[in-house]
Length: 188
Image (cartoon, rainbow, N blue to C red):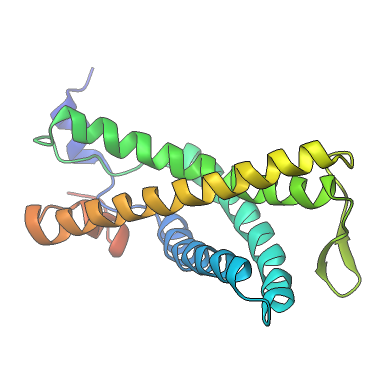
């Protein structure tokens, strides 16, 4: 049996290239979606154009989140610093799984919302997605409210995640931020 110290010494120092690429690509996409979603609710002049951008971007996030989740489940991840308080370890793990849940739930709720409204789910000219729920005003209202509520939760979790990353980069100056910010080889 190997010790925790042994396992830490042989653990990857950085997330794999796919994980890092998807992390940064999806960070930009999710931030864009949060701003697009807000603008959709406040702009009458650009609303249709923003909705036409929101749908395919949401489905792209859903598909990339699935790839990212599979990669996460199949890959070893760098360990958190051994001296990190247990509450921070638990908070880090919980926030990551909450982010995965939101990256999957938000697009599915948006898709269900359009389906429940009986609206076509147009990705691009001539490419429509099938409805995933029956047409129902009650279901539409529920999906709309859930999508809006989860968008606010996503914004809050992203802010906490970003804040924690910056604390690790600028205050703790440990390897947590670097594990996602740059590549590298395993510890030797």
